[in-house]
Image (cartoon, rainbow, N blue to C red; front, side, top):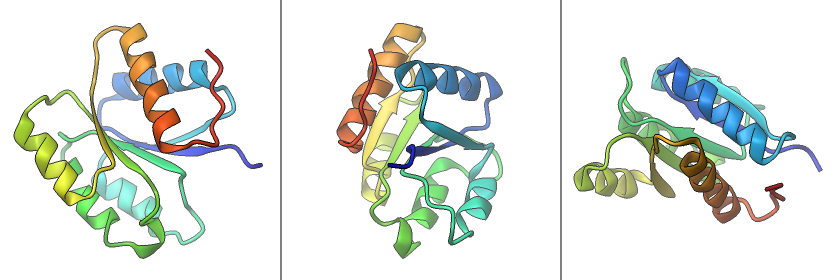
Length: 136
């Protein structure tokens, strides 16, 4: 079985680094690719041979925010089954509702402590990809 591929869309380099470090701590076999904004992510996703198993995306990004990017992703039929998890600092109930309506499978508020981030990401991985075996 091929390793799971995760696409992380986030403009903050520190957040991308922490995310990758935590994910590799959960399962070192996971493959993580990243994009720094919605436009870069959609450029990657135009390649019909590129099909991540999970997409995590920030909401607040320059050029194209996460909500607009999510709407575009949901227009690509080959990505309909790909879970998209919004991973944002925003706890605004309106943001959460808008993301759900646009097709987000889940919404995680970014924690400040590594242990909290690990727990949230581990739960999301288990919830949205049952073939994943985590090593905790």
